[in-house]
Length: 185
Image 1: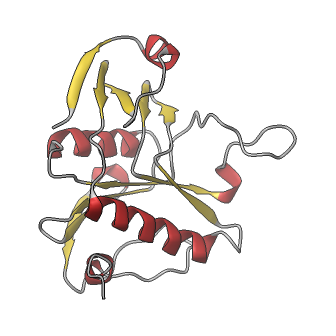
Image 2: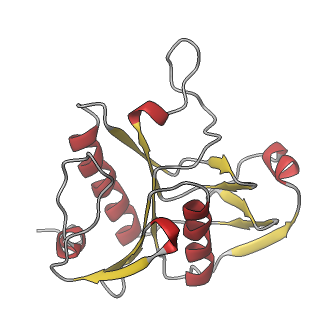
């Protein structure tokens, strides 16, 4: 279950020490994410690797696990944040910035057993309202994925349905393929 800590301002929240697992600030409330478990962790690793294997060599995009993104009056930590290459925050030297004060182009959340569906969906809808092109909410227990498109159009995908991918990333995945990663052989 997501623990709501207390109300605060975004500036006050950003001055607090980091927590493990990460805390987030959205809708003027602070909540701590649950500790990822096996299925969650494996999907997160496999998905980051699949995206980066395709998009990173061609400098199209980069997927980051558990990256704090501050935008639209919130500080959130999606399970996976994908940024188009040209939008990755950089220092003047070209080195990657430590602080990402912008929205991800693609935000991915994996629902943990003790997480509130409403809170996680609210986070993805916040992303959509502030420029994120694509959101996924992965439901390991039901083996389906909710895709969130611009204008907050949503679609539930299951089985052999091909998943929407951020444009220009040459990656084809089905819902079944994502959940097949959970079977270790």
